[in-house]
Each structure stands twice: as structure tokens, then as C-alpha cells.
Length: 335
Image (tube, rainbow, N blue to C red):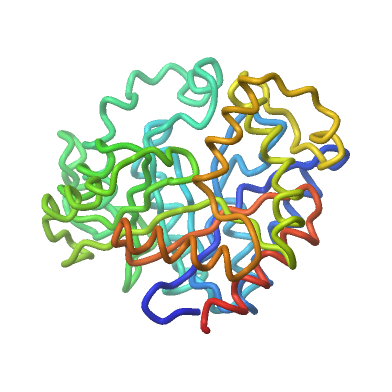
């Protein structure tokens, strides 16, 4: 990998049309192995609920499985949707993972629900603690990871076990200025979801750095950009593979994405003029092409946003094409 800009993987465990959640999770395990072999820096898994498109609903459980496979790559959550949960329990889970796999765990947290309002209510099961409490939850989680007093009244003497010599690296995830500001004020590294919100200006990272206050684990600001990417042997093949995501993107806008469609499904779909315009606008904000073209796009984004790391999201209907994409990008990233 390029020494100055580490390259990592975010896997959402996509469920392909004609396949099952079991298949998706097995493909995640295989991709984690491959990512380590190819020299990627981190391998993160996502959290989504009530989804027939994305199988990963519990990053902690999946990380427990992944830790037993690769032996050196950093593993993490991208991320835990913290407003759903007790910071104490999240701290316990990730300290346990860090104990099982010392020095390898990243804990990415986000504020988004990752699901619909009804499912979010079911996850919280009557709890009135919601996203408005997120800043306090972040502060309490940092304290519990570092064996210091939480800020919330009544929790002052709480300590999360097992104790670890080095706590998991906690990251703030987001796709808005609010998350960037909170990351800076909390002294956390920040990973921006460019694949979700590619319309953000580069000043978001400038504001993050300006507001950064050293925290218990990070003395300097540190940021990453997560980008959707597909590489293939030819640009034409990469664009063809990306048609699956074009259709899935339109279905997502309609609120019913469903399993990840095949290229054939996408080519047969009767897109409206408005849908084609939305797809065309979206295409310019991702890295799709040959390995060299993808590398150039990623480096362009890294320079524009002045980030320290790049993380890739790659989804294709053909799992071999997805593996091939990561292979091609890693093979040229060092050159």
C-alpha cells in the first residue's frame, strides 16, 4: 500500500439477489482473509437492521468470528449505532474483543439509526435515550474504554471489564458537519462517509482540525474518507459491474432497495429520465474504472480533502468481481 495513505476496507455484507444472508456473511469472512493477504490496513463491518439487502446487523458478533481468521489486520465496526445501546455494554463488548485479539480492534460509532423508525424503537425497547443524547454517550463511552469516570450522573464509579492494556481505537463516523465537529471536540479520529454524502465541501475536515481537542487516545487530528469503488481489467467492465449499484441506488431512493441486483436485472430495468439523471450525477462521485483510474480518483479525493486514510466500499453482484477489484487496487497502490 502507498505508505503515506493507508488503504482499508468497509464491508456491508451485501445480500445478492438469488443468494442468502448466510452466503453474504461467508463472503465477508473470505474478504477479510483476502484483505489481510493483500495488505489492507483495516477491515470494518457495518450495522444495518431489518434489511434484506445488507446482512450485518451486529458488528460485535461478526468481529468475534473475523478475529479468528486473519491474524494481523485491524478489525472494526463501521459502525456501532450508539444511540440504540448502553455505552457501558458497548465498552464491555469491545474490551472483550480487544482481549481476544489484542491491539487489533477499532470501535467506530455513529449517530444514524441504520434502519426505519419502527425498528429503531424496537431496538431501544422503550428507552427514551435517543440521538439527542449522542454527545454524552460518546463521552461516557470514551471514559469507560479508558477506565475513567463517566460524565453521566449516577455512573461516576462505573468501570467496564475486562481491563485491557490498550483500549480499542474509537472513531467517529459520519456524513455531516455535526459529526465532524463532535469528533474534533471529542478528540477522536473522524471517518467521513463520502459514499453516502459526496456533496460535502472540503472545509468539513478543516473545521474538524480547527476544533480538535486532544483526547485520551489521540493527540492529533486524524481523518479518513470512505469511497465507493470498483476496479476491473477494463473501464468498460467496471462500468458494467457498477450498473448493479445504479439500480440498487434508485431502489434505495424509493425506500425499498431489496437484495443487490445482478447486472442483467439492471440492464433490463426501464429507468425513467429522472432516474438516469440521478444515476449520472452519482457516477461522478465514485471511483470506477481500471485500477489506474481508480487510484488516480482516490488520490485526487485524498488530496482535495487532505485525509490521512482512504477506506473502500465495493459491492458487485458477482463476488469474484468484488475480490478482483480489491486485488487490482492493492496491486497498483504501491506503485
